[in-house]
Amino acid sequence: MEEVVTPPAPVGPALAVAGLGWGVGGMVIVEDVTLEVAAGELVSVIGPNGAGKTSLINLISGVHAPRTGTVRLLGEDITRLRPADRTQRGLGRTFQTASLFPGLTLIENVRLAAQAHLGGSLHLLAVPRPDDVAQRRAEAALERVGLLQRRDDIAGRLSHGDKRKLELALVISAEPRVLLLDEPTAGVSVEETQPLIDLIGQLHAAGTTIVMVEHRMEFVVDVSDRIAVMHEGRLLMTGTPRDVMTDDRVRSAYLGHRA
Image 1: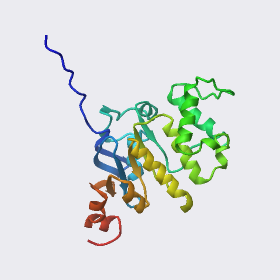
Image 2: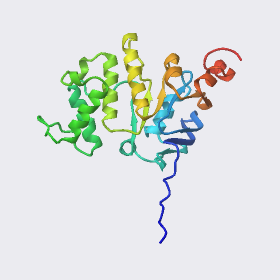
Image 3: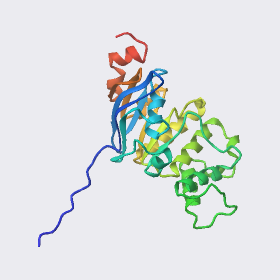
Image 4: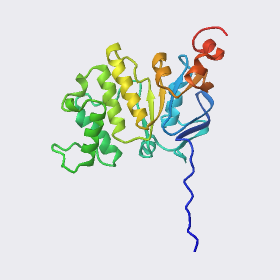
C-alpha cells in the first residue's frame, strides 16, 4: 500500500486586506486599500495627518465595519467578526492612548487581560492559584517588557513610556500572532523612546507579525521590512524603506518636497 502523504497547509499572508473602504456620512476616509503582510514581517504605515492610517487599523481590528472589502487573518475571513473574536483568533492591538486600569497594580492589569482572553471573568482573585494560567501569562508578559520587578506598582503612577510598555504586556498576554501598533511612541519622552523601540524590535525578532502606524521616521526606517504610504485615504505605495524614502510621490505627498 502506498504511503499517504498529507500535503502541507497552504502558505499565505498572516494578514490581508483587499479593497477596504470606509467613510462617515459622505466623506471617504479609507478607499480601496489592498495590503498583504507576510508572517513575521513588520510593515509600518505612514502618511500625513488625515491620511487614514488609524482608520485602517480600526478597520482591521474591528472598531469600524468596512463599507467595502475584506480582512483576512491567518487565512480566515474576519471582516464581520467583533474585536473580541478577532483577539481570540490571534489579533492584538494597541491604541494611541494607553488603555489601563490606573488604580490597579501592573500584575492585576495584565492578569485581567489574560483572563479575558482565556474566557474567564474580570474578577481578581486575592491570591491566585499556583496553577493559574492567567497569572503565569501575566508574569511572563511583564517579564518580556521589563516590568516584572514592578509588578506590584500602581499602573496610574507609571511614566508615559512605562504605561506604553504595560499596554504591550496586556496585548502580549493574549499571545497574538499579528500585532497592530497605533503610534507606539506617541507622547513618550526621548529618554524612554529607545527602550520602547528595542522592545518592539524584540517582538519582531521573535516572529510576531507587526503592522505599525508611526510618525518617527528614523524609527520607521530602522525597523521596518516594508513601509506602506497612505495619502488621502488611499495606499500610495508599498516598498522597502529605501524605495519609499527615495520615491518622488512620497516626498511630494508626505515629506513636503515637490517632485
